[in-house]
Image (cartoon, rainbow, N blue to C red; front, top):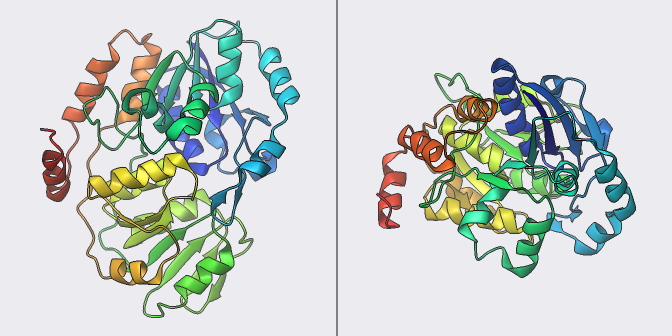
Length: 354
C-alpha cells in the first residue's frame, strides 16, 4: 500500500505522534511519503523516521507571549501559495491519504475528490463539539484541514468512537530523580526563568526554542530542543510543567508524572484539553505563570501511570488492511485494554461513564 501522510509541523506534538505511527506503518510494510507544513524547514529535528520528506509553507498560528495573535496569523497566510501547493500535489499514485491536521494534503484530497483519513486529537471536535471551541474555532476545524473519515485521539472516549493516544513505548525509570522538566515554548524564556528561580529547593530542566546551548542558571538547567535528551529527562523526572498540547501530556500520563499545565491563551484546543484534564483529575491547570499554583503543585505526589494499548500498531494494521473493521469496533477494543489509576476511574464514574 502506498500512502501520502501529511503532518502539521507547527507543534512538536504532531511530529512526535506521527513518528510513532511512521515506525508502525513501516513494520506493516506500507510505503509512505511524508509532507510537513507550518514550520520553517530548518527548524525540524529528529526527522529520521520520515525518510525523504517534503515541506510546504502551509498555514500556522502566530503566538506572541503565550497568546495567539490573530492579526499576525492573518498576515502570515499566503493564500495564493497555499492554493498553488494544493493544486500541484498529485495524489494519483497513492492508495491512501492521511492528514494529521495538515492542510495541504487534506485540501489536495478534497480538490481531487479523494478520501482522506484524518488522525489527530483535533478530530475529536467532529464527535464531541466542545463548548470551548466557539464559532470561530468550529469554522477553523471544519475548513483548516477537511477530511472524510475523522479518527479522534483522546485521553478518554466520553461515549464516542475515539481512540487512545499514540505513544512510543518507554522504559520506565526505576526511581525518579526529583527534577522537574519544563517545556513552555510559547512563553517568553525570561518569564519562565523568573518563575522557576523562586523555588531554589527544586531542580528544573528547561527546554525552550530560544535556548541554543546547554547552560546552568542556579537551580535551572537550560537545554536546547533535542528529542533524545528531552525523552531521557522526561523518563527520569518527577513532574512536568508544559503548555497543554496533546502529545507531551499523553507521554507524561503513561509515565506516571505529575503535570502542571498552562493552556496557550486563545488556543481553543489547549483550553479544551485543560478542561478535560481537570475533569478527569489527570493534571493541575494554571491560567498564567502562577507562583502559588506552582508551589502547591510541587508538594503533590506522583500519580500512578495510565496504561494505554499499542495504538500505533493497531492503527497501522487497520490502515494497511484497508480500514475494513468499523471504527467503533476498533475504538471499543482499544479502550477495553486501557487501565486508568483509581482516582481517574472514580472521576470517570462520577461523570456518568462505566
